[in-house]
Length: 268
Image 1: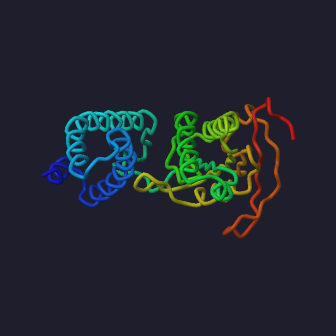
Image 2: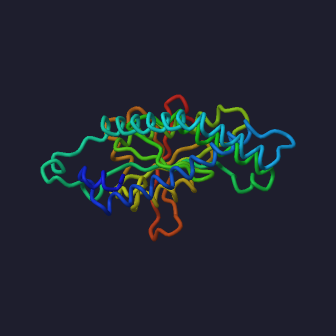
């Protein structure tokens, strides 16, 4: 019945299936922390399976209306935010079709030494660090930049505004440095044409940003020449140092990169 309602509203069948697939994955990821939260809140020492099942059922009846209302609110908020910040081009409005891709800045920030850290600290502490990275990104990545996804020890961010994305990466790296007990971050930013699909982005700048990040020093941000050019007049807001050409895995030619800092951090 719900599928018929989507079709009657004008949603193409294949597109609707793709969106439902993405939503299913998102709900699976959301369900796991909710399950842990409920278990931590309602599990009692010595519970039998029957007692636990009855308590979970009672909890579900009481809390699902609240969870449903929160999910609806968050979805409305995100859709409203996208509508405000992702205006369609004149060509898209004229043709009635979305463009296949867009010129976009892409960044990754990852935790330095995360693999080694995994051999030194308990798994629960490692998980806490990954969760804190997600929290830091949520707090310090600002529109029009937006977090696309977190991948364990890394976060991927995109923006139609290269300067805004560089600002967000500098803020995020500094926030990690200021956070008590948090490992250092490093970030890399690339710019070019990429394609959005099912909530993710694909294309050359995505791969390049990931590779550049791997060559950045701890607590630093590296940008490609394309990002440097896309900054335009906003370059005056940053301190830029040529960092040479880097050989990157999977990329044939060395890539020129620039290290970017805030003016107050202008020191080697």
